[in-house]
Image (cartoon, rainbow, N blue to C red; front, side, top):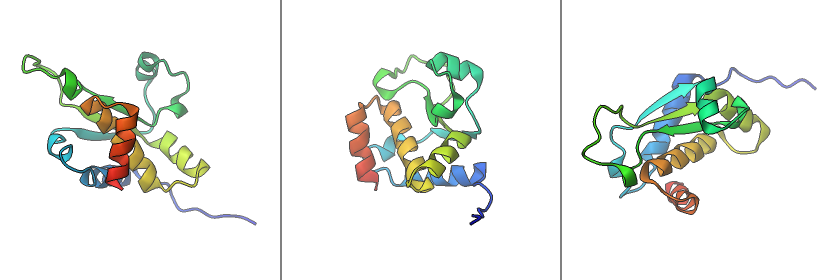
Length: 133
């Protein structure tokens, strides 16, 4: 039997999913997300992978870039605003390999990266994810 699939969701569709995930994040966290931008790339570049100590680009689904709020200071200047990058191809692969919906997968990665923005522990990130459902 041959299965037929439509085309993979575009970068713009991934961005819509990411913004929907942001919209489900509860207060008091939601009030501190202004200024975080979302970027969609197919894969992390070689420099990013090297900096993260990751050899296989398929292993990185998202990344927070910026200073976490627990290390933020009014004295920091000249820095770009915080951003979250979602890596489309690894996310698509994980979606195909699991029973998780793409919306839930993107939400999971966005909340994990938002957790880095707040300097949260993994346990706190899981609790935040549970609240966002």
